[in-house]
Image (cartoon, rainbow, N blue to C red; front, side, top):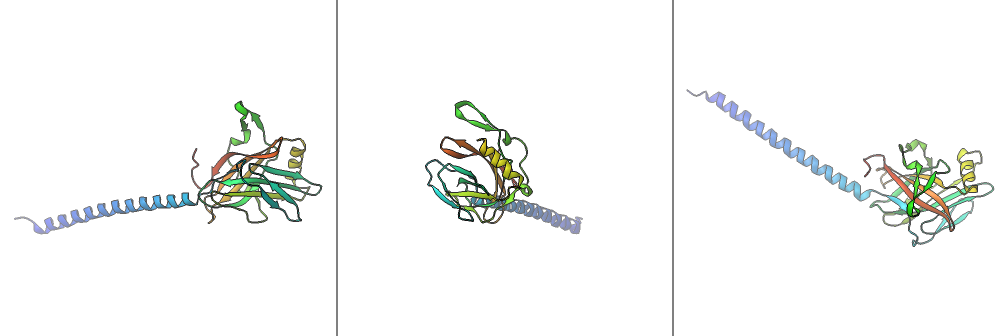
Length: 221
């Protein structure tokens, strides 16, 4: 005679196993869908800063103490005064999200080598990115809207600050400057470092993007 109890138990176990497999596949599919949706949302918020275009509008930059700068498209400004160094760069956000500037740093003069067709190469593009702890905080909130213009600005007012002398010497010797900007999206995520070179031309200082690093994700490189 058939052992109907055993057969029933085996059938139940088989059904449970099949249901568990279907549930696992469903959960895995749901997790993948949720992850893809999260990545899509992140890309909708990701900012990417570049130097602005030559035909972009001129922007007025004001500093504490009344100092003023006029910043044309594609340009930067570095002015060494008796008691301060003033710096600014015209930026364009080509990403989908608002760029919230968090800090800046500079090693002073950058090493630039001329290349074919007037192109340039910066030696600082090699190696690891700086850490967020290396950056100087900004004295005011600075935002660059998606698909629009903005600018970075900073002032050094302490001649004893080591970077003060490095930048002043580079300006006096008409050497290019390095500039790293740390920024996030509008909710403080997707930390990015963009490295620029500030180059002195016949028309004044120019900003040129060199490299991007994503700190919270793999960079597209």
